[in-house]
Amino acid sequence: MDPNNCKILLEAIDCRSLSKVAQEHGYTPSGISHMISGLEAEVGFPLFVRSRQGVTPTANCLKLTPALREML
Image (cartoon, rainbow, N blue to C red; front, side, top):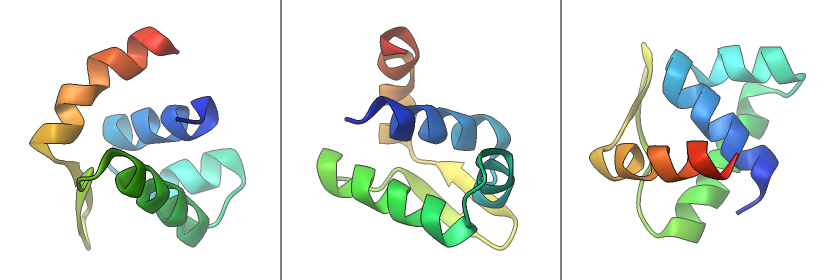
């Protein structure tokens, strides 16, 4: 896992918005969505439930969070 993508993932978990993360890092929301999709393909399960209100981390995503925070 790319450390930058992991950092993006953790920020999306914290703020629950891919658009906010995109704005903070100078990406488009679509670019962040592609990063998350790549991570989902890498781990083999969905990381977020997406809705108009933002994103909600899945149970499996939340299980990864402590290890990712420790890694970074």
